Image (cartoon, rainbow, N blue to C red; front, side, top):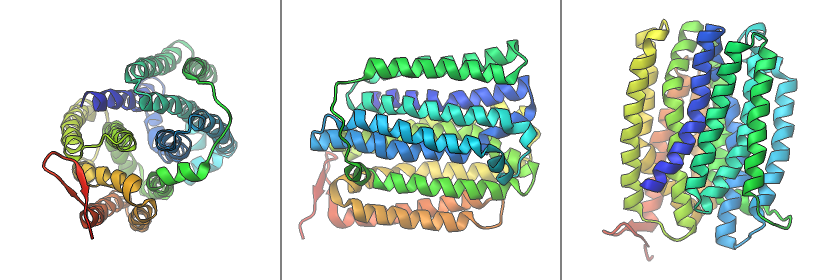
Length: 396
């Protein structure tokens, strides 16, 4: 549980800092800036896609295939590819803002900041995941805390002191980029350039395709929602503000599971129990944020509660299928597990394309229920869980 909480803390810091920043900027500069959180939300899944291949897959390959060169090679290749992708987005930033039905003059400067910040954060995440697999959680905690504090204090501080927005965000980005390079140099290992992309995709193919689907789901789903007007956009943004960090923290469940599975130290009951202890903590933080932030916005309470119910239901069943999916991916069949996850994502994508402001929430629930049923069927047909929590393969 202690390791799960340490990784959760890192993810919480990296996720909550942007939430806090957009909230403060909406009070300091322009109340509309809070909507940039929703505006750039789909782009974060590009980070997850690249992380899946060049970080998670590479680290699992290091453990299972004893390939000591693949992690550092993955960080370098992933960083180069991310620069190309995010550079393309920045060049076409006005088209992106138009697609999301938002005003270019209001959002352009800080949208560019958000995209560059996500790119820098991706490199930092590459390094953090490397440290997790090396069991250097304490070092990762220190780096993550410093990165998050630097990012938040520089952005808010310069925004208060400097009226020129371009100068303010440039100072902030330069600061966190310099610190990321420092951490990368401190965490590097000697290596020979070698990278097997097929193995990296294989070891995390479910999450890779999952995040690829999420990119399109939220890109078109949020575009649908914002088309219904500011009332729906603000309600969705508010719920995203108080739950997105918790969703990012929940990734710690699959991260810890994959580490233990790859090192043959996995115990299902221990992971499940720890996951629900973490869930209880996250629920408490959600309700605290709800109460603390609700009065700052003019919200339609009915719309807020509808979006809120979607999130609570999905949180509650997430651990039940995620842990088993991680095990099936690494120990049973990457192909079958990926096909099953892809079917869930196709279902979610189709529902998310419906012309309703609740399309993303309905899509998420339909996908979660499908995965809850299908992952359990696939797992129970091939494995059973002993009283001590170890997993035993069934004999045919």
